Length: 397
Image (cartoon, rainbow, N blue to C red; front, side):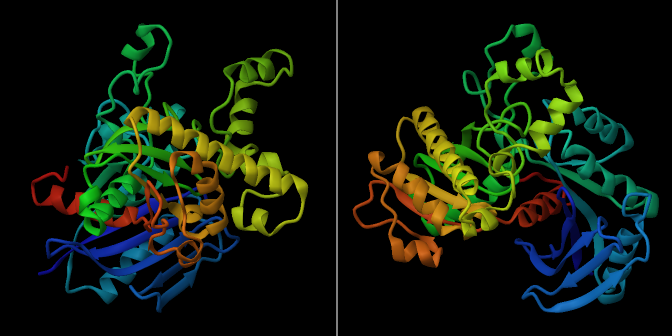
């Protein structure tokens, strides 16, 4: 009987999912979809591999149990459509694995509780990632569930890249730089090795640019530095997150603006970034289409910070051979790629305008010192690979 893996990728307002056949060496997509329980009538949409409509349903009222009804609908659809296949496991993207988890792990009540304890390190993401775990456990307690971590790809970071300049007793308690977007970076690094194997061992920066954004410096396909740290707040300007900020600003907000810690947290996660600077939108498409001065300023800060931190990654690498754009903005916003390229022209980055318009594969000019690519990411495939390896009794590294 062919085996399948259901992959859930929880976002801030919806959950993407994919069902993969894992009978062969490489997972193949059977269907994909979206669960959106934040609408007035929670919605489930299922599409085929080519995007064709397969199924859609709505619930009349939101589900107080964290989307349980919608998950039941997903499982019912899978059994009806793919009943001849065996659902071996459900794989989850879990944002923070802390110091203990460097690879995929089968979830137990004890492990889930340990992951929940990491919520202060990813308050926007961790609860959203763990809610489907509990919902599915209530519906199908016998179903194997597997956690795949966004921090795992960076688990090998070492000092000084992994370290904050604070007393060592805090590092001993796990206060260190972890990095995120690891499932995306892992997938893109693998695709780069397929597309341009001659670059696999070279000095590479991958720019995952989206509502959440970060950079990863790779050598020999492994992460040696990244822009996010203990939490997903650090580094680049993001949709509603601030990125790198003077710690003194936070002290000022608490001491002089009399903001509580909860108020500051809400400000940094939900009211900052592109939204905070523009005052209108966190959506890069909206900002690029706007003639408002504040919108242009938000875009300018985004590209300034991205280029600035590419240079920081280059310092870690000791040079740059390859730059890769991925993520929603990285893959689709040619203006952003072009602006970042212009800011990095001093290091020999030259983007070909026509290739940039096409946004496929290699986009550098012939005279560019740096090879430049646009590579679509696929976190769900990475999760499916890890889950298939785990249920077969081996790990993917």
